[in-house]
Amino acid sequence: MSRLVVVTGGTRGIGAAVARRFTDRGDRVVPLGRADCDVTDETAVAEVFGALGEVDVLVNNAGVSSSAPLGKTSVADWQAQLDVNATGAFLCTRAVLPGMLARDHGRIVTVASTAGRAGQAYTVAYSASKHAVVGLTRAVAAEVTGTGVTANAVCPAFVRTDMTAKNVRRIAEITGRSTEDSERVITSLSPLGRLLEPDEVAFAVEFLAAREAAAINGQSIVLDGGGIQA
Image 1 (cartoon, rainbow, N blue to C red):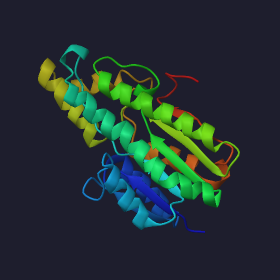
Image 2 (cartoon, one colour):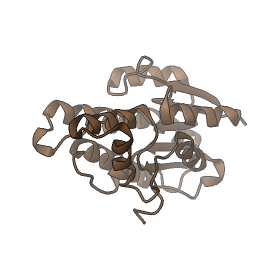
Image 3 (tube, helix red, strand yellow):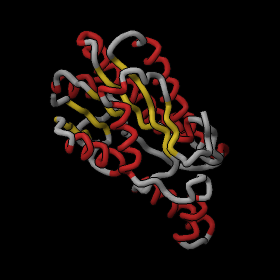
Image 4 (cartoon, rainbow, N blue to C red):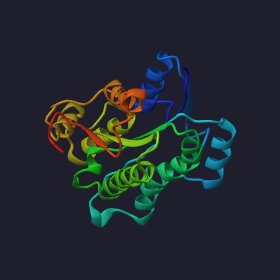
């Protein structure tokens, strides 16, 4: 039976790969881009999700990032990343959860990061925001225990996306390295020794959202080749 799947940040990168996977399964997919819904705006989120109807699967994927040492991280950068990465996931989850509980079925999957499981230098705001969504996932999972609803997260290492490309360019600008060398700096942080592809993350999301995954709740699945083991 077809499900209604909503993917925030669903128009490019990981979100677009997730949307394609669910579409290929025959689900009805609503990929929300920034122009469709500002996930940091409580009123906008309530209006958009209210108009969508009964959401079976929510994929919290909308995210932003920037990097700087703690001393050079502005309050604006700190707040912007918390707003999108953490508050956005909170607002969207809050919008769909009552309906899921009423129907006794639903899947919430949040795209976090390895930065949500272990601190990474020069990513204080990003790491804090991703730790926050892992905590959100666990708290929601505790609330829905014993129901037909689950809440889980995926925590990938660096993925081949526009966001990662931006980080590569920033490293190149600061260090004077080539783009290729700058990418190697990033990939060296993961045991994989390479960037993840968006579809690898989408596979993990699809797995956690499956009907057969009803016993998996409150987990944050790490995609980094074995560097962080839980």
